[in-house]
Length: 147
Image 1 (cartoon, one colour):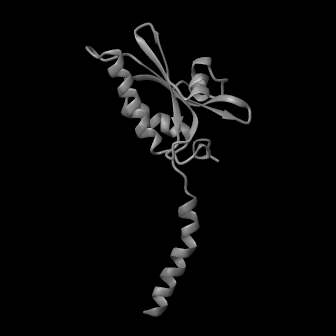
Image 2: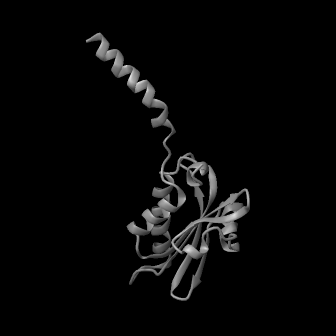
Image 3: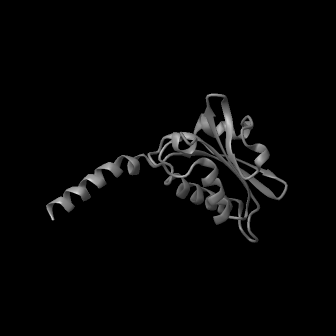
């Protein structure tokens, strides 16, 4: 009995470092999950400062990945304030992106058309709510970058 307890404890201690070093989803996985949960968001992208400057580190548009950040996405990273514009019938909403500890780590840009009867403010609040839920899942910038 004592030997089995000892072996169980030893096994747990051997596995513990692997469990604690597991990170959450990377940026592309989070973008894909957010898009599946909110298909009305026609485009989603995450921008961050990297060793190569400001880059789109994840996007629903494969052509945007690893590209230099657009100016409307840089502003939320610098100011901590959102940027909202209209592109045709869609809203282009760029929000500062924080980790679960409240640290500003980048920006997230989302394009969507407001639902029928939905005001601009209601659409923006819907995006804010979805991003807040996403931020709670981000342990760190390194997690998003897969480091």
